[in-house]
Length: 176
Image (cartoon, rainbow, N blue to C red; front, side, top):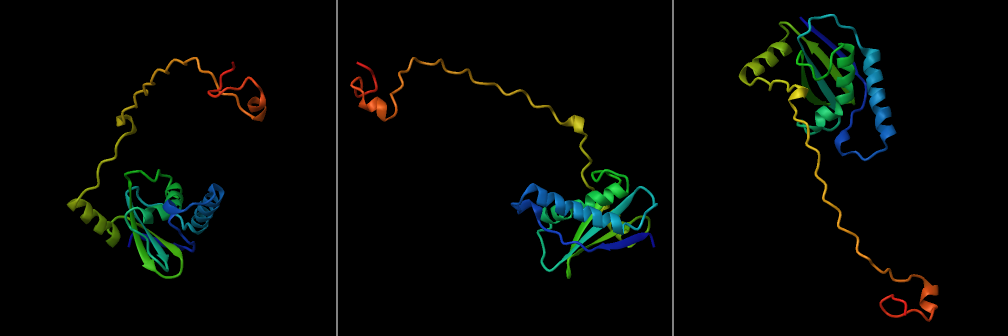
């Protein structure tokens, strides 16, 4: 079997809807990365692989965007340990959820493993879109600015109680 499994005992949260101080976000992400780093069993397999991250928790998240966001720190550390960018086409990231005590189960599969074979079969039916090179993004044109309207000679009304008490005050704010 071509598979490595290990469990990271961390609590993950949906970061997309949280309103918290940036240092609290940083501390949580660093704790998740450090826990993943400490429990990393080592890996020397081929470059093409499938990584499944299973979030175990008492509740579930929306699997479309909230689940990957909650597991982003774990994904970053796994990619760093593999010495790859997490956006690399050499790695397929698969997300799952299970009910239980808070933790994250990390599975790396390659070759003839059942998980890798299932992902290859799924890709044969609907292949993932090709990566978009960063050069393909067209640079933005500079924004045109409206010319400022010429300033009119305006007489500002006098302000404060002292201006109201002077005999030079007339309605409309002009001196007589």
